[in-house]
Image (cartoon, one colour):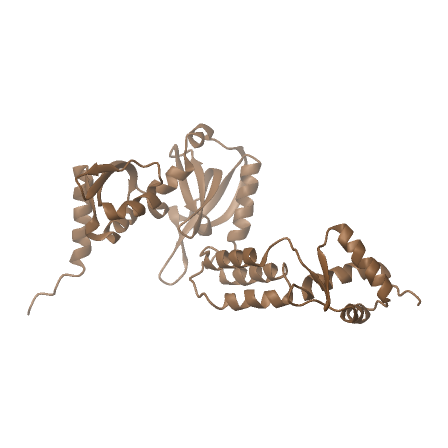
Length: 330
């Protein structure tokens, strides 16, 4: 049989067909492979396909032969791993809806079309809130480049208004920061960097940064970042919300030991306080988010000191309570 002009592509088409069309429950027959090649302008004989499959096996593809035909047994990702990645992409609030669909389509390419249908069905399960800032992916890449090149960056920082428009902090003035690390906390991506103007480590939500540009100046604040324990920093900063870090004492019912360990790590000291309670003494960023976490634990948790922080909490609670006070009778 005369060879067609596409013979050099035969192995590639055969590999593609096995990757896309076969799995353990869907082996492909010899006839199906020949028809696939013919549809792509390649004429082939059975004997040549046997030789090609042996070549692909030598290349490292785990092609299994069963009575019904052939299938690709192993892939870079197991199906359970792909499902885990799909779930992670769906659950990530900082990944926009459009990018979520794009990433999942790429993950589908790592399995057969039959397995991909299972991943597609998972896409419809969640309807989570996603960020509106599509450029976050390019920001992350720019920040990694700045860190790798030991460069400072400038950017503008914004919040959204009620009309969903951007309102820039500091009147739209540029921030100048030495970037050192990226962290993912409470469904958001944050840049950890050194602010030379304030002489301190600060964090910034990546999706609220705009116009990131590398500056032809080396990073500063290296010593300050070297002393930073990133895990401890995220544990004591609730929802990465700014505030003053202060030592506090908290009292909990024993049933909340697991909650405390989940929040502060297993290295936190649990000090017995009677038969039903324990204390912890921890440096925390005192903020409305911290108070909210504490309120969420109900009567099982109590801030016991220092007194100035207790008073701050009491006033905060009174302010919230005033929003729900009963109206005076007319």
